Length: 588
Image (cartoon, rainbow, N blue to C red; front, side, top):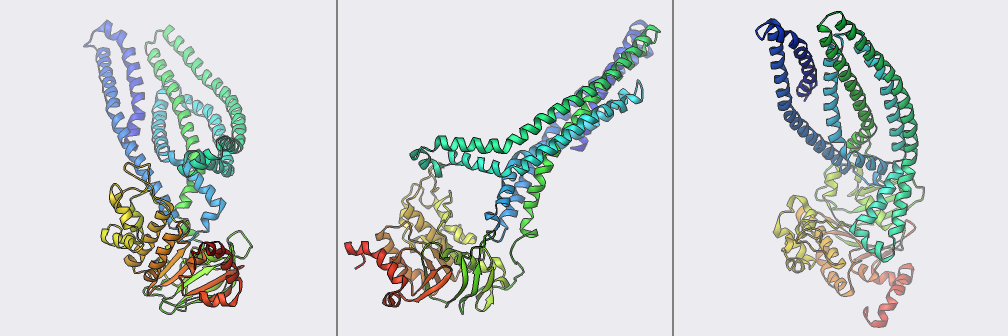
Protein backbone atom coordinates (compact mmCIF):
# COMPACT_ATOMS: atom_id res chain seq x y z
CA UNK A 1 0.00 0.00 0.00
CA UNK A 2 2.87 2.36 0.82
CA UNK A 3 4.45 1.80 -2.59
CA UNK A 4 1.19 2.24 -4.52
CA UNK A 5 0.26 5.39 -2.57
CA UNK A 6 3.71 6.89 -3.12
CA UNK A 7 3.36 6.32 -6.86
CA UNK A 8 -0.18 7.70 -6.90
CA UNK A 9 0.86 10.75 -4.91
CA UNK A 10 3.74 11.54 -7.25
CA UNK A 11 1.90 11.12 -10.55
CA UNK A 12 0.00 14.47 -10.39
CA UNK A 13 3.27 16.36 -9.96
CA UNK A 14 4.77 14.54 -12.94
CA UNK A 15 1.70 15.35 -15.04
CA UNK A 16 1.84 19.05 -14.08
CA UNK A 17 5.59 19.30 -14.67
CA UNK A 18 5.49 17.61 -18.06
CA UNK A 19 2.40 19.58 -19.14
CA UNK A 20 4.15 22.83 -18.24
CA UNK A 21 7.33 21.71 -20.02
CA UNK A 22 5.39 20.71 -23.13
CA UNK A 23 3.50 24.01 -23.24
CA UNK A 24 6.67 25.96 -22.59
CA UNK A 25 8.65 24.24 -25.35
CA UNK A 26 5.94 24.20 -28.01
CA UNK A 27 6.33 27.84 -29.28
CA UNK A 28 10.08 27.33 -29.97
CA UNK A 29 9.48 23.79 -31.35
CA UNK A 30 7.00 25.20 -33.86
CA UNK A 31 9.48 27.86 -34.96
CA UNK A 32 12.61 25.68 -35.02
CA UNK A 33 11.09 22.37 -36.11
CA UNK A 34 10.39 18.97 -34.54
CA UNK A 35 14.00 17.85 -34.81
CA UNK A 36 15.33 20.84 -32.89
CA UNK A 37 16.26 20.71 -29.21
CA UNK A 38 12.96 22.38 -28.10
CA UNK A 39 11.06 19.96 -30.38
CA UNK A 40 12.76 16.92 -28.87
CA UNK A 41 12.17 18.21 -25.35
CA UNK A 42 8.48 18.84 -26.16
CA UNK A 43 8.18 15.32 -27.59
CA UNK A 44 9.90 13.81 -24.53
CA UNK A 45 7.57 15.74 -22.22
CA UNK A 46 4.56 14.46 -24.15
CA UNK A 47 5.79 10.87 -23.89
CA UNK A 48 6.36 11.17 -20.13
CA UNK A 49 2.95 12.83 -19.78
CA UNK A 50 1.27 9.91 -21.55
CA UNK A 51 3.23 7.37 -19.51
CA UNK A 52 2.20 9.09 -16.27
CA UNK A 53 -1.47 9.12 -17.29
CA UNK A 54 -1.29 5.46 -18.30
CA UNK A 55 0.41 4.53 -15.03
CA UNK A 56 -2.27 6.37 -13.07
CA UNK A 57 -4.95 4.29 -14.80
CA UNK A 58 -3.10 1.06 -14.00
CA UNK A 59 -2.06 1.81 -10.43
CA UNK A 60 -5.53 3.01 -9.37
CA UNK A 61 -7.34 -0.37 -9.55
CA UNK A 62 -4.30 -2.14 -8.10
CA UNK A 63 -4.21 0.27 -5.18
CA UNK A 64 -7.95 -0.12 -4.54
CA UNK A 65 -7.60 -3.90 -4.51
CA UNK A 66 -4.78 -3.66 -1.97
CA UNK A 67 -6.75 -1.26 0.25
CA UNK A 68 -9.90 -3.39 -0.01
CA UNK A 69 -7.98 -6.49 1.08
CA UNK A 70 -6.43 -4.67 4.03
CA UNK A 71 -9.81 -3.28 5.06
CA UNK A 72 -11.40 -6.70 5.19
CA UNK A 73 -8.46 -8.23 7.03
CA UNK A 74 -8.47 -5.45 9.60
CA UNK A 75 -12.24 -5.68 9.97
CA UNK A 76 -12.05 -9.44 10.53
CA UNK A 77 -9.16 -8.96 12.96
CA UNK A 78 -11.00 -6.38 15.07
CA UNK A 79 -14.25 -8.35 15.14
CA UNK A 80 -12.55 -11.60 16.06
CA UNK A 81 -10.33 -10.03 18.72
CA UNK A 82 -13.26 -8.16 20.24
CA UNK A 83 -15.44 -11.27 20.38
CA UNK A 84 -12.54 -13.33 21.73
CA UNK A 85 -11.84 -10.78 24.44
CA UNK A 86 -15.44 -10.50 25.60
CA UNK A 87 -16.35 -14.21 25.54
CA UNK A 88 -13.13 -14.92 27.46
CA UNK A 89 -14.44 -12.98 30.46
CA UNK A 90 -14.71 -15.71 33.11
CA UNK A 91 -17.67 -14.32 35.04
CA UNK A 92 -20.75 -12.13 34.70
CA UNK A 93 -19.68 -9.10 36.75
CA UNK A 94 -18.69 -7.06 33.70
CA UNK A 95 -22.02 -7.61 31.98
CA UNK A 96 -23.84 -6.01 34.90
CA UNK A 97 -21.42 -3.05 34.94
CA UNK A 98 -22.88 0.03 33.23
CA UNK A 99 -19.42 1.42 32.41
CA UNK A 100 -18.52 -1.81 30.63
CA UNK A 101 -21.81 -1.73 28.72
CA UNK A 102 -21.00 1.81 27.61
CA UNK A 103 -17.67 0.58 26.26
CA UNK A 104 -19.42 -2.18 24.37
CA UNK A 105 -21.70 0.46 22.88
CA UNK A 106 -18.63 2.40 21.74
CA UNK A 107 -17.38 -0.78 20.07
CA UNK A 108 -20.57 -0.73 17.97
CA UNK A 109 -19.78 2.81 16.83
CA UNK A 110 -16.57 1.68 15.15
CA UNK A 111 -18.21 -0.84 12.87
CA UNK A 112 -17.02 1.46 10.09
CA UNK A 113 -13.57 2.00 11.63
CA UNK A 114 -11.73 -0.88 9.90
CA UNK A 115 -12.76 0.50 6.51
CA UNK A 116 -12.28 4.13 7.41
CA UNK A 117 -8.96 3.62 9.20
CA UNK A 118 -7.30 1.82 6.30
CA UNK A 119 -8.74 4.27 3.78
CA UNK A 120 -7.62 7.20 5.92
CA UNK A 121 -4.07 5.90 6.29
CA UNK A 122 -3.89 5.10 2.59
CA UNK A 123 -5.21 8.54 1.71
CA UNK A 124 -2.85 10.21 4.16
CA UNK A 125 0.19 8.47 2.64
CA UNK A 126 -1.02 9.48 -0.81
CA UNK A 127 -1.55 13.08 0.23
CA UNK A 128 1.83 13.29 1.91
CA UNK A 129 3.56 11.97 -1.23
CA UNK A 130 1.58 14.47 -3.29
CA UNK A 131 2.48 17.28 -0.89
CA UNK A 132 6.21 16.53 -1.17
CA UNK A 133 6.17 16.22 -4.97
CA UNK A 134 4.11 19.39 -5.35
CA UNK A 135 6.50 21.21 -3.01
CA UNK A 136 9.29 20.60 -5.52
CA UNK A 137 7.18 22.20 -8.24
CA UNK A 138 6.22 25.16 -6.07
CA UNK A 139 9.88 25.67 -5.15
CA UNK A 140 10.61 26.36 -8.86
CA UNK A 141 9.52 29.91 -8.16
CA UNK A 142 10.87 30.53 -4.66
CA UNK A 143 11.98 28.19 -1.90
CA UNK A 144 9.81 29.99 0.63
CA UNK A 145 6.55 29.16 -1.21
CA UNK A 146 6.17 25.58 0.15
CA UNK A 147 7.06 26.76 3.65
CA UNK A 148 4.48 29.57 3.52
CA UNK A 149 1.75 27.18 2.30
CA UNK A 150 2.43 24.79 5.17
CA UNK A 151 2.46 27.63 7.70
CA UNK A 152 -0.79 28.98 6.29
CA UNK A 153 -2.50 25.59 6.67
CA UNK A 154 -1.24 24.76 10.18
CA UNK A 155 -3.75 26.96 12.11
CA UNK A 156 -6.69 25.34 10.38
CA UNK A 157 -5.24 21.90 11.07
CA UNK A 158 -4.81 22.73 14.75
CA UNK A 159 -8.38 24.02 14.94
CA UNK A 160 -9.73 20.81 13.40
CA UNK A 161 -7.65 18.69 15.77
CA UNK A 162 -8.87 20.56 18.85
CA UNK A 163 -12.43 20.39 17.56
CA UNK A 164 -12.27 16.61 17.22
CA UNK A 165 -10.74 16.37 20.70
CA UNK A 166 -13.67 18.24 22.22
CA UNK A 167 -16.32 16.38 20.26
CA UNK A 168 -14.63 13.03 20.87
CA UNK A 169 -14.59 13.50 24.64
CA UNK A 170 -18.22 14.58 24.60
CA UNK A 171 -19.27 11.50 22.64
CA UNK A 172 -17.39 9.26 25.06
CA UNK A 173 -18.94 11.02 28.04
CA UNK A 174 -22.45 10.78 26.59
CA UNK A 175 -22.20 7.16 25.44
CA UNK A 176 -24.72 6.10 28.11
CA UNK A 177 -27.40 8.25 26.44
CA UNK A 178 -26.57 6.81 23.02
CA UNK A 179 -26.80 3.29 24.49
CA UNK A 180 -30.27 4.03 25.85
CA UNK A 181 -31.26 5.48 22.50
CA UNK A 182 -30.16 2.29 20.76
CA UNK A 183 -32.09 0.21 23.29
CA UNK A 184 -35.32 1.96 22.34
CA UNK A 185 -34.43 1.54 18.67
CA UNK A 186 -34.03 -2.20 19.22
CA UNK A 187 -37.42 -2.34 20.94
CA UNK A 188 -38.96 -1.00 17.75
CA UNK A 189 -37.05 -3.33 15.43
CA UNK A 190 -36.81 -6.70 17.16
CA UNK A 191 -39.27 -9.57 17.07
CA UNK A 192 -39.01 -10.21 20.80
CA UNK A 193 -40.73 -6.91 21.61
CA UNK A 194 -42.98 -6.68 18.53
CA UNK A 195 -46.09 -8.17 20.16
CA UNK A 196 -46.13 -5.93 23.24
CA UNK A 197 -45.19 -2.87 21.19
CA UNK A 198 -48.41 -3.32 19.27
CA UNK A 199 -50.80 -4.66 21.90
CA UNK A 200 -49.90 -1.97 24.44
CA UNK A 201 -49.61 0.86 21.89
CA UNK A 202 -45.97 1.63 22.73
CA UNK A 203 -45.02 2.96 19.29
CA UNK A 204 -45.13 6.69 20.08
CA UNK A 205 -43.71 6.18 23.57
CA UNK A 206 -40.72 4.26 22.17
CA UNK A 207 -40.06 6.75 19.37
CA UNK A 208 -40.17 9.65 21.83
CA UNK A 209 -37.73 7.97 24.23
CA UNK A 210 -35.37 7.14 21.37
CA UNK A 211 -35.34 10.75 20.14
CA UNK A 212 -35.01 12.21 23.67
CA UNK A 213 -32.02 10.06 24.56
CA UNK A 214 -30.35 10.64 21.19
CA UNK A 215 -30.75 14.40 21.60
CA UNK A 216 -29.45 14.22 25.16
CA UNK A 217 -26.34 12.42 23.91
CA UNK A 218 -25.72 14.69 20.92
CA UNK A 219 -26.80 18.22 21.92
CA UNK A 220 -23.44 19.08 23.51
CA UNK A 221 -21.64 17.66 20.48
CA UNK A 222 -23.64 19.90 18.16
CA UNK A 223 -22.98 22.99 20.29
CA UNK A 224 -19.24 22.38 20.33
CA UNK A 225 -19.26 21.57 16.63
CA UNK A 226 -20.88 24.93 15.86
CA UNK A 227 -18.31 26.82 17.92
CA UNK A 228 -15.47 24.85 16.38
CA UNK A 229 -16.79 25.54 12.88
CA UNK A 230 -16.83 29.31 13.46
CA UNK A 231 -13.31 29.18 14.88
CA UNK A 232 -12.09 27.10 11.92
CA UNK A 233 -13.69 29.50 9.43
CA UNK A 234 -11.83 32.41 11.04
CA UNK A 235 -8.50 30.61 10.69
CA UNK A 236 -9.43 29.65 7.14
CA UNK A 237 -9.80 33.34 6.23
CA UNK A 238 -6.31 33.96 7.61
CA UNK A 239 -4.99 31.06 5.51
CA UNK A 240 -6.62 32.52 2.38
CA UNK A 241 -4.69 35.76 2.92
CA UNK A 242 -1.36 33.92 2.98
CA UNK A 243 -2.20 31.87 -0.10
CA UNK A 244 -3.36 34.99 -1.95
CA UNK A 245 0.04 36.56 -1.29
CA UNK A 246 1.73 33.53 -2.90
CA UNK A 247 -0.40 33.71 -6.07
CA UNK A 248 -0.07 37.49 -6.44
CA UNK A 249 3.71 37.15 -6.16
CA UNK A 250 3.71 34.40 -8.80
CA UNK A 251 1.51 36.39 -11.17
CA UNK A 252 3.54 39.59 -10.79
CA UNK A 253 6.83 37.77 -11.41
CA UNK A 254 5.44 35.97 -14.45
CA UNK A 255 4.17 39.19 -16.04
CA UNK A 256 7.56 40.80 -15.59
CA UNK A 257 9.31 37.76 -17.03
CA UNK A 258 7.11 37.64 -20.14
CA UNK A 259 7.53 41.38 -20.66
CA UNK A 260 11.30 41.01 -20.45
CA UNK A 261 11.27 38.30 -23.12
CA UNK A 262 11.97 35.22 -20.98
CA UNK A 263 9.87 32.35 -22.42
CA UNK A 264 10.62 30.06 -19.47
CA UNK A 265 8.68 32.45 -17.21
CA UNK A 266 5.38 30.88 -18.25
CA UNK A 267 6.69 27.38 -17.55
CA UNK A 268 7.85 28.48 -14.11
CA UNK A 269 4.44 30.04 -13.47
CA UNK A 270 2.56 26.89 -14.48
CA UNK A 271 4.82 24.67 -12.37
CA UNK A 272 4.76 26.94 -9.35
CA UNK A 273 1.07 27.91 -9.42
CA UNK A 274 -0.22 24.43 -10.05
CA UNK A 275 2.31 23.00 -7.62
CA UNK A 276 1.22 25.51 -4.97
CA UNK A 277 -2.44 24.66 -5.59
CA UNK A 278 -1.77 20.94 -5.46
CA UNK A 279 0.40 21.32 -2.38
CA UNK A 280 -2.24 23.34 -0.55
CA UNK A 281 -4.86 20.74 -1.41
CA UNK A 282 -2.58 17.96 -0.20
CA UNK A 283 -1.67 19.74 3.05
CA UNK A 284 -5.31 20.37 3.88
CA UNK A 285 -6.12 16.75 3.00
CA UNK A 286 -3.35 15.55 5.32
CA UNK A 287 -4.85 17.59 8.15
CA UNK A 288 -8.30 16.26 7.27
CA UNK A 289 -6.97 12.71 7.49
CA UNK A 290 -5.32 13.54 10.80
CA UNK A 291 -8.70 14.78 11.99
CA UNK A 292 -10.31 11.47 11.05
CA UNK A 293 -7.52 9.59 12.82
CA UNK A 294 -8.22 11.75 15.86
CA UNK A 295 -11.85 10.59 15.74
CA UNK A 296 -10.81 6.95 15.76
CA UNK A 297 -8.24 7.68 18.45
CA UNK A 298 -11.06 8.21 20.94
CA UNK A 299 -12.88 4.99 20.17
CA UNK A 300 -10.34 2.43 18.98
CA UNK A 301 -8.31 2.40 22.24
CA UNK A 302 -11.51 1.61 24.15
CA UNK A 303 -12.20 -1.31 21.84
CA UNK A 304 -8.59 -2.48 21.87
CA UNK A 305 -8.72 -2.53 25.68
CA UNK A 306 -11.83 -4.72 25.56
CA UNK A 307 -9.87 -7.21 23.48
CA UNK A 308 -7.52 -7.95 26.37
CA UNK A 309 -9.81 -7.18 29.31
CA UNK A 310 -10.17 -10.85 30.28
CA UNK A 311 -6.40 -11.13 30.58
CA UNK A 312 -5.72 -7.74 32.19
CA UNK A 313 -8.73 -7.39 34.54
CA UNK A 314 -10.63 -10.68 34.86
CA UNK A 315 -12.21 -9.68 38.23
CA UNK A 316 -11.82 -13.29 39.32
CA UNK A 317 -9.03 -15.46 40.66
CA UNK A 318 -7.95 -17.63 37.73
CA UNK A 319 -4.83 -19.13 39.30
CA UNK A 320 -6.40 -22.57 39.83
CA UNK A 321 -4.93 -25.47 37.86
CA UNK A 322 -6.38 -28.61 39.46
CA UNK A 323 -8.43 -31.01 37.40
CA UNK A 324 -12.08 -31.53 38.34
CA UNK A 325 -12.44 -34.78 36.41
CA UNK A 326 -14.62 -37.34 38.17
CA UNK A 327 -15.89 -34.88 40.78
CA UNK A 328 -17.89 -34.55 42.94
CA UNK A 329 -17.10 -37.88 44.58
CA UNK A 330 -17.44 -36.66 48.17
CA UNK A 331 -19.83 -33.75 47.82
CA UNK A 332 -20.21 -29.97 47.62
CA UNK A 333 -20.07 -27.67 50.62
CA UNK A 334 -20.94 -23.99 51.09
CA UNK A 335 -19.01 -22.76 54.13
CA UNK A 336 -20.34 -19.54 55.68
CA UNK A 337 -20.84 -18.06 52.21
CA UNK A 338 -21.84 -14.41 51.95
CA UNK A 339 -22.39 -12.68 48.63
CA UNK A 340 -23.38 -9.23 47.38
CA UNK A 341 -23.53 -8.34 43.70
CA UNK A 342 -20.87 -5.86 42.51
CA UNK A 343 -21.90 -2.28 43.23
CA UNK A 344 -24.48 -3.32 45.83
CA UNK A 345 -24.24 -3.72 49.61
CA UNK A 346 -27.33 -5.91 49.87
CA UNK A 347 -26.44 -9.45 50.96
CA UNK A 348 -28.10 -11.98 48.69
CA UNK A 349 -26.49 -14.84 50.62
CA UNK A 350 -25.71 -14.26 54.28
CA UNK A 351 -23.52 -16.82 56.04
CA UNK A 352 -24.92 -19.74 54.04
CA UNK A 353 -23.89 -23.23 55.18
CA UNK A 354 -24.96 -26.14 53.01
CA UNK A 355 -23.77 -29.69 52.40
CA UNK A 356 -24.75 -31.51 49.17
CA UNK A 357 -23.76 -35.19 49.17
CA UNK A 358 -22.71 -36.80 45.87
CA UNK A 359 -25.19 -38.65 43.64
CA UNK A 360 -28.24 -37.15 45.35
CA UNK A 361 -31.03 -34.93 44.05
CA UNK A 362 -31.56 -31.71 45.97
CA UNK A 363 -34.28 -29.12 45.38
CA UNK A 364 -33.82 -25.45 46.29
CA UNK A 365 -37.06 -23.65 47.10
CA UNK A 366 -38.07 -20.34 48.61
CA UNK A 367 -39.73 -17.10 47.72
CA UNK A 368 -38.31 -14.69 45.14
CA UNK A 369 -35.07 -13.07 46.30
CA UNK A 370 -34.17 -15.90 48.66
CA UNK A 371 -30.86 -16.46 46.83
CA UNK A 372 -31.54 -19.72 44.99
CA UNK A 373 -30.39 -18.65 41.53
CA UNK A 374 -27.47 -16.73 43.05
CA UNK A 375 -26.33 -19.94 44.72
CA UNK A 376 -26.33 -21.60 41.28
CA UNK A 377 -24.31 -18.73 39.79
CA UNK A 378 -21.66 -19.10 42.51
CA UNK A 379 -21.49 -22.84 41.97
CA UNK A 380 -20.90 -22.19 38.25
CA UNK A 381 -18.25 -19.64 39.27
CA UNK A 382 -19.86 -16.76 37.41
CA UNK A 383 -18.97 -14.89 40.60
CA UNK A 384 -16.82 -15.64 43.64
CA UNK A 385 -18.25 -15.35 47.17
CA UNK A 386 -17.78 -12.04 48.96
CA UNK A 387 -16.69 -14.10 51.95
CA UNK A 388 -16.61 -17.76 52.86
CA UNK A 389 -15.86 -20.48 50.35
CA UNK A 390 -17.35 -23.25 48.23
CA UNK A 391 -15.58 -26.59 48.10
CA UNK A 392 -15.80 -29.57 45.79
CA UNK A 393 -14.61 -32.72 47.57
CA UNK A 394 -12.96 -30.45 50.13
CA UNK A 395 -11.10 -28.34 47.54
CA UNK A 396 -11.93 -24.67 47.06
CA UNK A 397 -13.52 -24.02 43.65
CA UNK A 398 -10.86 -21.36 43.04
CA UNK A 399 -8.18 -24.05 43.02
CA UNK A 400 -9.67 -25.82 40.00
CA UNK A 401 -8.98 -24.90 36.41
CA UNK A 402 -12.09 -22.89 35.55
CA UNK A 403 -12.74 -24.44 32.13
CA UNK A 404 -12.20 -27.94 33.50
CA UNK A 405 -14.54 -27.23 36.42
CA UNK A 406 -17.32 -26.17 34.07
CA UNK A 407 -17.02 -29.37 32.05
CA UNK A 408 -18.41 -31.12 35.14
CA UNK A 409 -21.63 -29.05 34.95
CA UNK A 410 -24.75 -29.71 32.92
CA UNK A 411 -26.92 -26.65 33.43
CA UNK A 412 -30.22 -25.39 32.10
CA UNK A 413 -30.87 -21.83 33.20
CA UNK A 414 -34.26 -20.25 33.69
CA UNK A 415 -33.47 -17.71 30.95
CA UNK A 416 -31.91 -20.28 28.62
CA UNK A 417 -30.96 -19.15 25.11
CA UNK A 418 -33.22 -19.78 22.12
CA UNK A 419 -30.51 -20.20 19.50
CA UNK A 420 -31.80 -19.22 16.06
CA UNK A 421 -30.10 -22.26 14.62
CA UNK A 422 -31.08 -25.83 13.87
CA UNK A 423 -32.73 -28.04 16.47
CA UNK A 424 -29.63 -30.27 16.30
CA UNK A 425 -27.37 -27.36 17.17
CA UNK A 426 -29.64 -26.21 20.00
CA UNK A 427 -29.23 -29.59 21.66
CA UNK A 428 -25.69 -30.34 20.52
CA UNK A 429 -24.27 -27.20 22.11
CA UNK A 430 -24.51 -29.04 25.44
CA UNK A 431 -21.34 -30.81 24.35
CA UNK A 432 -19.83 -28.73 21.59
CA UNK A 433 -17.17 -31.36 20.94
CA UNK A 434 -19.94 -33.75 19.84
CA UNK A 435 -22.63 -31.41 18.54
CA UNK A 436 -22.40 -32.99 15.07
CA UNK A 437 -23.02 -36.45 16.53
CA UNK A 438 -26.62 -37.03 15.43
CA UNK A 439 -26.96 -40.22 17.50
CA UNK A 440 -26.00 -38.48 20.74
CA UNK A 441 -28.32 -35.57 19.94
CA UNK A 442 -31.16 -38.00 19.28
CA UNK A 443 -30.47 -39.81 22.55
CA UNK A 444 -30.58 -36.54 24.53
CA UNK A 445 -33.83 -35.53 22.82
CA UNK A 446 -35.33 -38.98 23.51
CA UNK A 447 -34.61 -38.78 27.23
CA UNK A 448 -36.79 -35.68 27.58
CA UNK A 449 -39.44 -36.82 25.12
CA UNK A 450 -38.91 -34.21 22.39
CA UNK A 451 -37.29 -36.26 19.60
CA UNK A 452 -40.53 -37.12 17.80
CA UNK A 453 -41.64 -33.48 17.84
CA UNK A 454 -38.35 -32.40 16.23
CA UNK A 455 -38.36 -35.20 13.66
CA UNK A 456 -41.81 -34.11 12.49
CA UNK A 457 -40.53 -30.64 11.53
CA UNK A 458 -40.07 -29.88 7.83
CA UNK A 459 -36.33 -30.58 7.88
CA UNK A 460 -36.29 -32.82 10.94
CA UNK A 461 -33.68 -31.94 13.54
CA UNK A 462 -31.91 -29.78 10.94
CA UNK A 463 -34.85 -27.34 10.91
CA UNK A 464 -33.88 -23.79 11.99
CA UNK A 465 -35.82 -22.85 15.12
CA UNK A 466 -36.58 -19.31 13.91
CA UNK A 467 -39.21 -18.24 11.43
CA UNK A 468 -37.03 -15.49 9.98
CA UNK A 469 -34.86 -18.11 8.26
CA UNK A 470 -35.93 -20.03 5.17
CA UNK A 471 -37.71 -23.22 6.17
CA UNK A 472 -37.51 -22.25 9.82
CA UNK A 473 -40.17 -22.58 12.49
CA UNK A 474 -40.69 -21.70 16.13
CA UNK A 475 -41.58 -23.94 19.06
CA UNK A 476 -44.02 -23.54 21.89
CA UNK A 477 -42.72 -22.58 25.32
CA UNK A 478 -42.97 -26.14 26.58
CA UNK A 479 -41.20 -27.53 23.52
CA UNK A 480 -38.39 -25.01 23.92
CA UNK A 481 -38.09 -26.04 27.57
CA UNK A 482 -37.65 -29.66 26.52
CA UNK A 483 -35.02 -28.68 23.94
CA UNK A 484 -33.15 -26.82 26.69
CA UNK A 485 -33.40 -29.85 28.97
CA UNK A 486 -32.07 -32.01 26.14
CA UNK A 487 -29.12 -29.62 25.89
CA UNK A 488 -28.31 -30.26 29.56
CA UNK A 489 -28.64 -34.00 29.01
CA UNK A 490 -26.29 -33.67 26.03
CA UNK A 491 -23.71 -32.25 28.45
CA UNK A 492 -24.18 -35.29 30.64
CA UNK A 493 -23.74 -37.89 27.95
CA UNK A 494 -21.28 -35.94 25.81
CA UNK A 495 -18.97 -34.54 28.50
CA UNK A 496 -19.86 -37.03 31.25
CA UNK A 497 -20.85 -34.06 33.43
CA UNK A 498 -21.51 -35.21 37.00
CA UNK A 499 -23.47 -32.22 38.30
CA UNK A 500 -26.90 -31.56 36.77
CA UNK A 501 -28.44 -28.16 37.56
CA UNK A 502 -32.02 -27.41 36.53
CA UNK A 503 -33.28 -23.88 37.17
CA UNK A 504 -37.09 -23.80 36.79
CA UNK A 505 -37.18 -26.79 34.40
CA UNK A 506 -40.99 -26.96 34.32
CA UNK A 507 -41.83 -23.24 34.19
CA UNK A 508 -43.25 -23.50 30.66
CA UNK A 509 -44.81 -26.96 31.00
CA UNK A 510 -48.44 -27.74 31.62
CA UNK A 511 -49.46 -30.22 34.31
CA UNK A 512 -49.43 -33.22 31.95
CA UNK A 513 -45.98 -32.45 30.57
CA UNK A 514 -44.73 -31.73 34.07
CA UNK A 515 -45.94 -35.16 35.14
CA UNK A 516 -44.08 -36.74 32.21
CA UNK A 517 -40.90 -34.95 33.23
CA UNK A 518 -41.45 -36.20 36.78
CA UNK A 519 -41.39 -39.74 35.43
CA UNK A 520 -38.15 -39.00 33.54
CA UNK A 521 -36.49 -37.26 36.49
CA UNK A 522 -35.29 -40.38 38.29
CA UNK A 523 -33.57 -41.54 35.11
CA UNK A 524 -32.09 -38.09 34.39
CA UNK A 525 -30.60 -37.75 37.88
CA UNK A 526 -29.56 -41.38 38.48
CA UNK A 527 -25.95 -41.49 39.65
CA UNK A 528 -25.61 -37.70 39.34
CA UNK A 529 -25.56 -34.90 41.84
CA UNK A 530 -28.65 -32.93 40.87
CA UNK A 531 -29.75 -29.44 41.93
CA UNK A 532 -33.31 -28.47 41.10
CA UNK A 533 -34.57 -24.89 41.52
CA UNK A 534 -38.31 -24.36 41.21
CA UNK A 535 -41.26 -22.36 42.49
CA UNK A 536 -43.63 -25.22 41.71
CA UNK A 537 -43.79 -27.43 44.76
CA UNK A 538 -45.29 -30.29 42.78
CA UNK A 539 -41.99 -30.34 40.86
CA UNK A 540 -39.63 -30.27 43.85
CA UNK A 541 -41.26 -33.40 45.24
CA UNK A 542 -39.12 -35.18 42.64
CA UNK A 543 -36.02 -34.50 44.75
CA UNK A 544 -34.73 -36.74 47.53
CA UNK A 545 -33.99 -33.70 49.67
CA UNK A 546 -35.50 -30.20 49.78
CA UNK A 547 -33.67 -27.07 50.96
CA UNK A 548 -35.92 -24.13 51.88
CA UNK A 549 -34.08 -20.81 51.68
CA UNK A 550 -35.04 -17.44 53.11
CA UNK A 551 -33.02 -14.19 53.12
CA UNK A 552 -29.91 -15.95 51.86
CA UNK A 553 -29.90 -18.73 54.48
CA UNK A 554 -31.08 -22.31 54.83
CA UNK A 555 -34.07 -22.38 57.17
CA UNK A 556 -35.44 -25.88 56.51
CA UNK A 557 -33.84 -29.05 55.19
CA UNK A 558 -35.23 -32.53 54.59
CA UNK A 559 -37.42 -34.77 52.38
CA UNK A 560 -40.88 -33.56 51.36
CA UNK A 561 -42.73 -35.73 53.85
CA UNK A 562 -40.54 -34.64 56.77
CA UNK A 563 -40.90 -30.93 55.95
CA UNK A 564 -44.67 -31.29 55.62
CA UNK A 565 -44.91 -33.03 58.99
CA UNK A 566 -43.01 -30.16 60.65
CA UNK A 567 -45.63 -27.64 59.56
CA UNK A 568 -43.03 -24.92 58.90
CA UNK A 569 -42.57 -22.37 56.12
CA UNK A 570 -42.30 -25.05 53.43
CA UNK A 571 -45.53 -26.71 54.49
CA UNK A 572 -47.36 -23.35 54.61
CA UNK A 573 -46.35 -22.36 51.09
CA UNK A 574 -46.99 -25.85 49.75
CA UNK A 575 -50.54 -25.78 51.12
CA UNK A 576 -51.18 -22.31 49.63
CA UNK A 577 -49.98 -23.39 46.19
CA UNK A 578 -51.69 -26.78 46.30
CA UNK A 579 -55.09 -25.50 47.45
CA UNK A 580 -56.25 -24.78 43.92
CA UNK A 581 -55.18 -28.17 42.61
CA UNK A 582 -56.77 -30.04 45.52
CA UNK A 583 -60.14 -28.68 44.48
CA UNK A 584 -59.74 -30.45 41.13
CA UNK A 585 -58.08 -33.54 42.56
CA UNK A 586 -54.90 -33.05 40.54
CA UNK A 587 -52.58 -33.59 43.51
CA UNK A 588 -54.56 -36.38 45.16
